[in-house]
Amino acid sequence: MNKTELVNAIAAEAKLTKVQAKEALEATLKAVGETLAKGDKVALIGFGTFSINKKAARTGVNPRTKQKIKIAAKKVVKFKAGADLNAKL
Picture 1 (tube, rainbow, N blue to C red):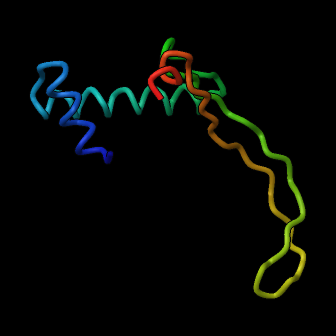
Picture 2 (spheres, one colour):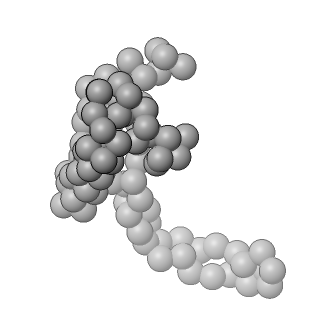
């Protein structure tokens, strides 16, 4: 499912126009992104939890040249599905 299909599904389920559904989806994604950027987690009961994980710097290997390279430390988004979402799968 892509963003357009998700907007269409939201509009149909919530009985909104596609414009309203798109605005609601974009507002939700913006709020989640801003919360994660602050270092907080977002817990949506029944759906799942978004959080930030820190990956330490490490040494990797360039597959073309086989030379060792340094991979910088970074933050990544982690999602853990909630019980209700897992039950639907």
